[in-house]
Length: 192
Image (cartoon, rainbow, N blue to C red; front, side, top):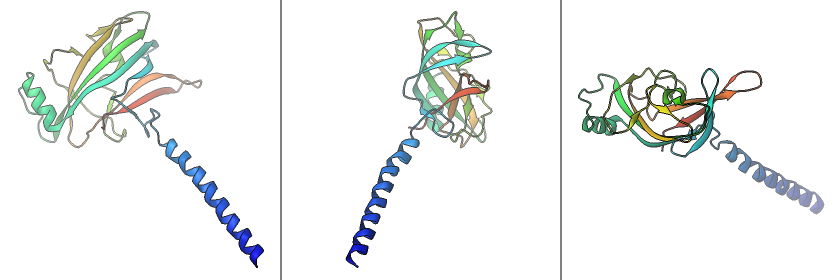
């Protein structure tokens, strides 16, 4: 009977060791990888290729300021916005630092991020219908009017009106194509 007990005990210990060694792997799998499921933190600098219709260049992008709700409303009112966002809407303000590491020519900032296809709700599920709100905050505007030259770093911002309850927002950048010509996207969250 003692031999059976020892054998059972060693089997239980071995199972515990195996389960303990698997648990850290599952924790690491949840680490941000830039996917929709595990977006990168927008507040950390990220180096990425950027594509439009073709390769545009390599950029380093970092969100340096983000405001939504009452904080965004207060900030935007202090910087020239006169109207409230309206019923079932709220303002979002984003300020980015973008460096062009390499490109063949100037690239418009809105090729990297734009109000039409880049911004999503907090769960990366629903693309946001946005309205760009002109703001005079002293930064370049995140638009086709702001050109970024190779080697240049720009600070640009965008203010948006979005559906209430969509914040903190997420956004995506087109980062190329895989071998089957499927678009590769890098996803970012503004959640702190």
